[in-house]
Length: 304
Image (tube, rainbow, N blue to C red; front, side, top):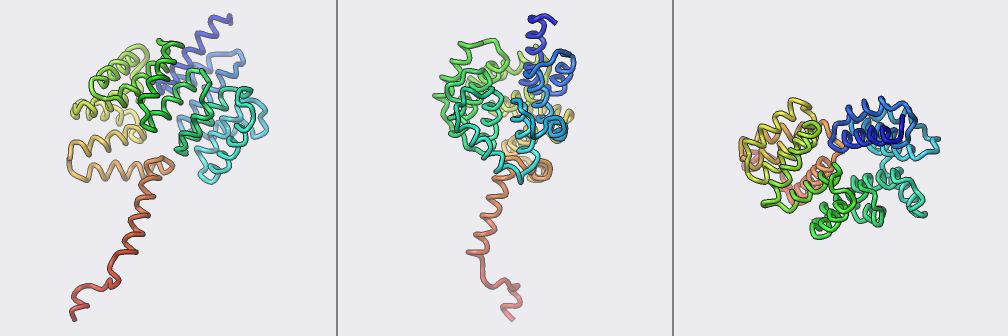
């Protein structure tokens, strides 16, 4: 395999991963016979994205002395809630040294874990100064989560200067446009549509279009797209979240909202939404105990 073919095949691997076509990414990786760390990184990340953590844990041993070890830690973090705190500590310690000496996968995985912990400032400290395109995209993600659209625009400009045509740059611009809202929602929609036409309409891209429709109050169009997503994967987290949001906007019967919420609570116990929901539920229960009536007897017994 000559160098140009190798680069071309890795681009296909990267594009498949970034648009959420994880099985195609794995298939493309399997076509590359020459050993490649970058290929293996995307392959194992695709397995993690498909929640196939056992594959990663079986193949990347804890004694692994390559950057792939970062992906084992990510698989452990995502699959074992009891290991989350320990994994975060591992990355905290890892980043106390010279970050510039680390392979970029350590930085990417560390930032992903910090984002999952919702410690966005910590994630940005790891990412700042790294001009790898995915690091820039993650930096923008953190800024958008912190509602710093002004700074996110600056990161978008840096990404465009680095590689305006890259799939990751286009996706990042689309999510920035969604956050800006207004007329930019249509620009975001066109980006998702262009990527669908160029590659294939994945759940990630279709959900992006659905978000644009919801923001434009085109609820029938949003529902049509989300129904297609449900047919492809009835348990997809992003699809269920968007259906939850759509059911609120359309003000339909509460049973539909409750069904989507129940499915998320059942199938995505480790998600940020479920964590927030459980926290609010616990707070509500505490307030009920604190301020509820001390006499819990039925009213007829009290009167008697």
